[in-house]
Length: 412
Image (tube, rainbow, N blue to C red):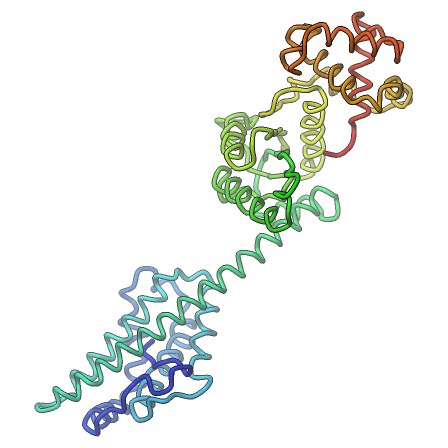
């Protein structure tokens, strides 16, 4: 809408000549007619405007137009301005942002209003009033610059606020869905999810040292969230932290197990977070299956880490035996306790983990750990001596693997 200089800039506009003021005054009787013409005629040419509800066009927009016209005419008489002159424009800009009106449409409506007012002034001018008309047009355009900046700023600030509120609402729903505090069906409906989904568990490397400050963590989280949103698309919802989290995305016919999208996400996240990015995707055919799918995905990632598997995307088939061995029952504590004698020797535990992952190949294990093969042999012998497990035998190897998995069986 046409308007005036900001109240913070008193005297920014010169006092207009009596001739310019007289020309503007002759338009005051046409304010209501001009408002109707803008709201129901001129604005109809804007793409998407015709789809707005009638009450928005006939009441809210028309009222805003009338306010802008009267404010312009009042400022012609007194260019100093008053506090609160912009309140309706701020309110309407925020309201349009909340309703989802595109910003280009909103700004074009203000520019169109300026053009219609210019036409009215031009039509009202008579011979000899060219100078007065130029004064008014200059005043009008300078006022439009001020109001257009205010409207755009208010709209964008409101949009950022609404986006943050929506994201936090979605985070709360995902959290409630996964911890059982929100009924699955209601959570899916509120999140806009429909049909089978994939629940993704992400594990990201933790920052340590000076880089692990709170500010750095927030910056990293914003970058991670941006990558997740860009890769998974607008239909996905997520609950993320600096060390990972969960995402729920509709299942695609051409990628039912999420391998393709998972590989894309891992590749992009490595560019932001480093190499130790892990991901698992588990299908949830119904809303009620989502919490269980999330637990399974978390277990798969945890087990893959415990087994020393390289970072990347992990599937159930990759850790099928290990997954089975990691389930808790009456024997679990006794099996986990088999490694108590080496729990204060992390180098022995790491060697055991790598040795099992590399299928008992001492040279491959040595290369992975950066050791001499003889050092690997010595460590394995020490493990056998301290625990009583014969790592070289099938039974001893299975017990050692199960003990590792059960000791690492914590949420992660």
